[in-house]
Image 1 (tube, rainbow, N blue to C red):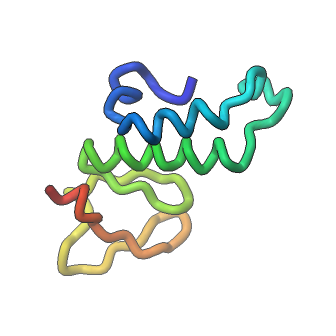
Image 2 (image 1 turned 180 degrees about the vertical axis):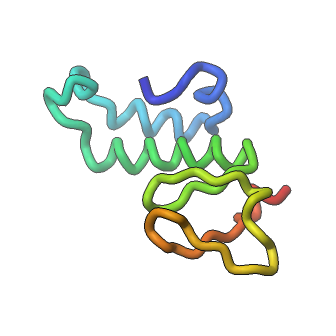
Length: 92
């Protein structure tokens, strides 16, 4: 299961459709392993929920509350050091 029902329905339908398009039966048991396309669609779905919940997902996968990221100061990810900036979706 990628996410709970409440979060799944926060994901825009076109993105949900892409997740299902690239899902392969058995991939949760890694037989076969999830495809690169499925991972890309899943990452997009997670980012969509994070934006709606006013969070920022770093490229390494860590999630930050947008309120913890300063608008005028440069914030860096504690894991990979990437710059963290509020996206337009997260700041509305």
